[in-house]
Length: 179
View 1 (cartoon, one colour):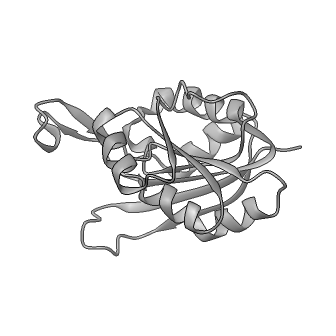
View 2: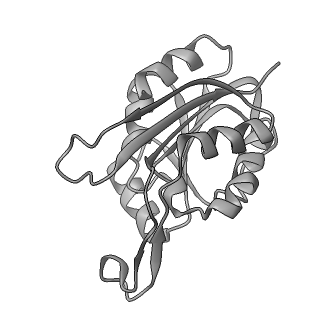
View 3: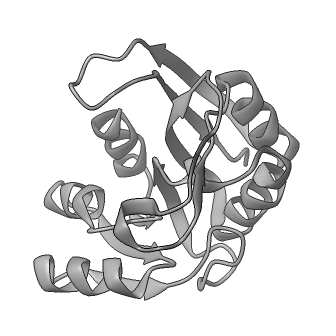
């Protein structure tokens, strides 16, 4: 799916993209290795420190999915690689509207997420002593939120778990912002 997204971006004159919710920067690095101009955005200062150390040639900024530290129309596209799993269903519209703000007309989005299940709540997430809920959005719900923000759905996919750490279906949506 990332390769398909990269190919869509390469058709455009602008190749600036964001990895939103970049974590340690693996998707950002993959896109940069394939010739895209990438900025990573994450809410976690710790994750940004890891990303910057691992990928010093990539720009990383602190920010939230619903308040991106990017100018309006700054991007040819954006990837949310498993970052919307922390967005409650009632906040998806807000996140999609923010993505629409930063992506140019004709630009593309790729969202990947754990799908089709009940939320998982942890009182002590990953040893941080902080609570965290992971949401399992349906492909239809994500596609609907993107359409509500003005995107056209290019393609969707839902696959069964196949990797050892996967416990639920995996959803993917590629969307385009109409010209």
